[in-house]
Amino acid sequence: MRTLSILLFLFVLGTAPALAESVAIVNVNVIPMTSEVVLPGRSVVVTDGRIAAIGDVDTTALPEDAAIIDGTDRYLMPGLAEMHAHVPGASSQDLERVLGLFAANGVTLIRGMLGQPSHLELRKQLAEGEIVGPRLFTSGPSFNSNSVDGPEQAAAMVREQVRDGYDFLKIHPGLSLAEFQAIARMANELHIPFAGHVPEDVTVEQALAAGIATIDHLDGYMVSLLVPNKDPSGGFGGFFGVYLAEHADPGEIVGIAAATATAGAWNVPTQTLFENFVSAEDPQRMAERPELKYVSAGTVESWKEAKSELMQEALYKPETAARAIELRRQLILALHRSGAGLLLGSDAPQVFNVPGFSIHRELKLLVEAGLSPYEALQTGTVYPASFFNQESYFGTVQPGLEADLVLLDGNPLQDIGNSRRIHGVMIRGRWLSRQDIDRLLQRFER
Image (cartoon, rainbow, N blue to C red; front, side, top):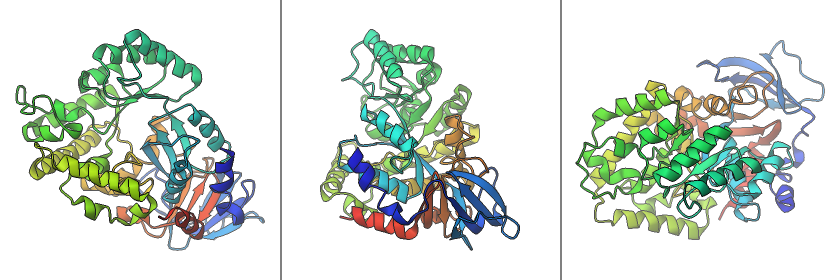
């Protein structure tokens, strides 16, 4: 871990202001995300890693030692969250790259959905600034058919992870209903959230009743849309129920969305993962996406092979896949309109999802599903802060909050594609200029 902290960002930040110094972003358009407004002509002063002041550019006093950043014709918004990240272990050669790619794309918070013991120390080092990177909320090792052997052992595993200090529990496929319910009972008793998949033996309704914190990938929802006794697959629904789409009833969407809202559960759709994998798009063409140059050739080949294999399955039909994509988009919009919380997440790194870059693809898909750009941005800013009950720390641009910020060269409220036009990123007061980001990305180019 010491090697990581030396190599990752310190060389990038060699010319950046020290954490204790002040930074002033001058004459900038502020998108506070407290409401759908743009505050023009502002100066934002950051001191000791927090937003110290926001005021009119002509009247706001700047500290004498402040490093000045020109915000003219630019837009300042909160940093983004990746609420379904896969974080490598401390000894992995990929950790530096994954954290760097997140930061370079304005991701200042990650929820690690495949935890391990080394992440506890990594979380501490990120929080204390020993490593400059996104703040980390981490699960423990996942609960799945390999790690869980019966309800009693499942409950004991919950107690162990609470003792070790993980932020939440990760649910994976393969659990029996009895095991899932034992995990839920113990988690609720010990006040630790559990989140992730809905196992095949568990319905979405049962997961909601048990108190699941987030359902990721919209797992289980396609089954909940099936017309009774009309499952032609013999129980094999494919990747998150893609093959069930032909017999799913869109009329069921409003009801299950309302039930989700009533239960208080959140969803992390990871729509870009689903569309990457099941769409009829040529995997070779997908491999030519510009961000794929930051992934090893071997990984890209494995992603191409995985998609090609799915497209060659006997049940695969492009029209069924297209219907599944459309049904999921309808469900995303219905969840949002019903008041069920949506959280921004793409599942990266994963099939054609490059860390950081895929978050901007997910934002675009949320807008294509019917959310406004502002509503899509809420899923990656104010909503994660609300989900973690940490609105006084991050999620908006307000005095007193930690300075997790992204400076853009275009207004994302007018065009969500402008979220990609990153001029600089601030991670709890540490400034990465466009030049710093380009140097960082260059290191990771294949």
